[in-house]
Image (cartoon, rainbow, N blue to C red; front, side):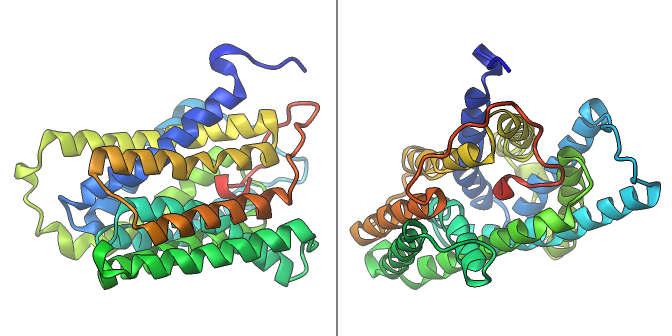
Length: 326
C-alpha cells in the first residue's frame, strides 16, 4: 500500500503526538504551581474526558462488529475499559500530579516515559512471557543502574534534597502504574475500539480524580485564576489527552507498534527542552548522568539491539490497546 505523504505522513502524526506528550509535563507543572495538585489533575482529565466524548460523537462510528459480538459483550468491554482507567488514569495521575507538587517536571519526563518500558520488559522476562536475549538483559541492567544513579542524584541537597527525591519516587509509582496498565491492557480492553476504550478509561479515571479533589475545590479562588492558566488547562485537555491519542493510533496503524514505540523516546527530549526553557528547571550532574544511562538502557531493552522493520502493509491498531501497550 502506498505511503501517505505530507500532512498525512504517519511519522509526522507520531512526531506531533510526541511533541504534545513531551510538552504536557511542564504544562502540568505550571498548573500545579497555581492550584492544588488534586484539582490540577481533575481539570486536565475532566477536560480530557469531555474532549474525548466529543471525539466519540464526531468520529466514533463503530466498526463492523465480529460475528460473535453481542450487546452484552460490548457492555462488558466498556466496563473493562472503565476498570482499566482506575489504574491507568486515576492511580497514575494521582501519583504524577502529587509528584509535580514536590519535584521538577524535568524529572517526571525522564522517570515515567523511560522507566515504564523498562519495568514492563522486566516483568515479561521474569514471568517467562518473553525470551531473555542478551541485548535486552544488558539494556535492563543498564536501565536499572541509570535509575539508581538518577535517584541518588535527586537526593543531593544542592538540587532539591529529600523533597525532590520524594517527588521522584512518586513519579516511580506512576511508572509502575503505567507499566501495570500496559500489561493488563490487551486482556482488559479486548473487543473494544481504541477511541472508545480511551474515552471510557479517561471518564472513569476523571470521576475518581473528582472524588479525590473534592476536599480541595473549596480552597480555590476561582475568580482570581489568570486567563493563562485556563488556556493551559484547555491545551492539556484537548492536546495531550485527546488529539495526541487519536494521532497516535493512526500512526501506529501505518508504521506498526515497534517503530512507533521507538518514537516514544522523543518525549524525554521534548520535555527536557520545555522544562529548561519555560520553567528554568535543571539537572545536577549526577542526575544528568543517570538520565543518559537510563535512557540508553531503555532503548537497548526495547529494541533488543535491533531497529524494527516497518510492516509491509498498513494495518489497523489492535482494538483496545493504549499508547504504552503499542
